[in-house]
Image (cartoon, rainbow, N blue to C red):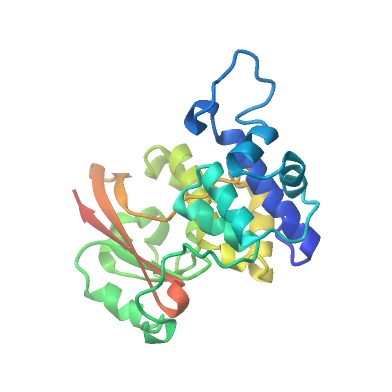
Length: 269
């Protein structure tokens, strides 16, 4: 189980675990290497990653094994490029290493200029398609009547029994029949949650949340162990409603203080 810690050794272990998972996922062909007939390890070998990143095999091994307490920005940049990390994975890598990514996109507005979280409740109510807002921990902040109707297994009551989206998806049996392709969507949500909450890794509430959900759901624990990192984004979503299968296009917008609020809007396709 992944237990985020505040001590340096724990952070080095988390960084190593993430790199190991990324290395094992990357296929030789994707990295421009010959597949070979006899590979005893999944993905790439450590020495292959080191060569791709332009660092010594020993240094890479130490990083992956959590035996170093400081990794330079240049090395992190090389690792992100060598391992073909996506934008969300790269951001997560730098978060784990407690380094500022020199290539990170700059926000167009300062956090102080963002509307307060409470304003989202009023905004959601003004919308005429299903919409809801989540806080930094993915607890429900607000939803409109259209969202309550569409998400009736989750939001049908005035006060949902489970206000947290991730816990509801993994722990409520109703979610499995309501969400089309539940297994894929649940794994993706775990990967999105990892990316979305990287800055909370030292937060006591966040650590308790992960530990508890891992204990309550073997499927979540497996998804969390996989170290997948994906940006929370829009796209097509299918739900098994009382009117039959309905397809929506989802839009995910960020705001609030430091972008901690997620506004999710669904438009009937």
